[in-house]
Amino acid sequence: MKRFTLTTLSMIALLFSYNSLAHTDEFLDTQKTPHGGQLRMAGHYHLELVVTEKSLTVYVTDHAGAAIPTKNGTGNAIVLANKTKTTVELEPVDDNVLQGEGKFVLDPNMKVVVSVTLPEDKEPQQARFEPLIKQQK
Image 1 (cartoon, rainbow, N blue to C red):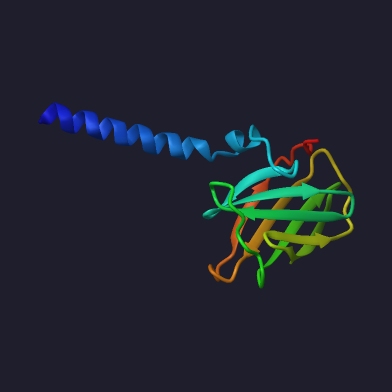
Image 2: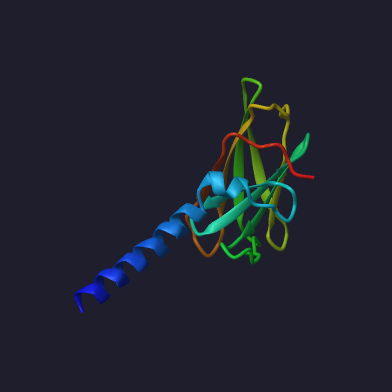
């Protein structure tokens, strides 16, 4: 019985350690994303950030990749690039998409902090895209 308990506890510990490793920024950076952006965890969501010269697009999904509705949600992104701080307001534009436009310079050392508030949570969930990796094609 003691051996069974020890084996069971060891297996549970391995399962939980795998899950915690599965969502590190380093692991998420290795994942191919549906829209070519960078993936981060924000609470119980995954946020995929796609950056263009004038806009930021954030796709919101659960950990399994299922779309999370953003209707009536809000968000913002703080962009730190080229020694300038720019805040971009994000608004729902599609089923699971928040988007906003701003004046910022694309910079290889760019950092973006995204904050998203969805009606079901009422509290903002935040993700740091630091460093912002080059967009996938």
